[in-house]
Length: 344
Length: 112
Image (tube, rainbow over all chains, first blue to last red):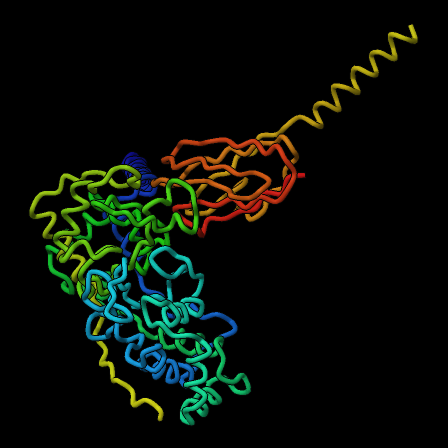
């Protein structure tokens, strides 16, 4: 009887102890749980967002691909979208700032179009609300492709192959500014960086990235707080931040939203495929990821209207290397890109 | 006697009216990059002239609140988690409120 009572008490005690442990665990998540939760927040979605009036179809993507690589969309018949958004250079151009019509250097770097389907706003200053709006912007900009929509549409209408391709992709809608924009946007929505070593790691392959890169991830979401802006599956918050670049006179987002915090602020770019798209920042100020990490470790340079989230980080040399190693794991599985035969 | 009763009733009426017309203070939280009122995402909030909204940042990073609408133009700057700033809406109209850092954070305030 006495033994039974003791056993019962022991059982009660152990149940209570277990309950207490469980309660403590639920009240204060372990570092591991917190890291797992953070890892999940970067998990890549299975589908790409597509507007209701421009469903993604193979014929639209095929047409958009031809248009994307066709220099006849420029005033000079010499510059295509792919001239600056070169698939061999991470869908960018490797230049500090874009070179446009007449080899004129623009004031901003060419943003990669990788994963631009996920951006809520397009361009460094976010002035376009969709890929459709954005697609026809550079075609008409004098410093970029220097074309006019009337000229471009007339050229496309004179090519029987395009007349057929537009009819297949957008039956009965004709060759218009809208169908031109929709087709290019459809192709851009297929330029996706995914299945990177980082993706494999967060889905359970413990050896998909090196111990240094794993430490880099912990820094990214911890001491360095990079995920304050580079958050979510696309490592971008669709937000605008002044990151304190030296001698930056470009007002950026302020042109669209004239409030103080927007002065010198630019859209957070994705970090997917970031190792493939040097140089970095809106003005191409840095040639390497190491220089970028040094910038943030200093807490920026020009503090005049610096985003208050940016502060000196106090990273050691090893920690800086770990962060760079981590960013290099964000390069997606490379897909072969074939230059399409253009319709004549 | 009648006069004092009338004064009493009038006083009660004045107090009730002033309670009904008193400006209200609304608390809107900035949470998970949304404007949140009473625990739900607030796309639209209806106010009376003179009412105020206190915007409280609940996220672990800075937010901004501004409006460039004609009925109320303001910029509260940017502030960190736990801090709040207040705006009084002193004119009728529709006011679009946004965070300049995170433009997907939007709400409309309708002041009557």
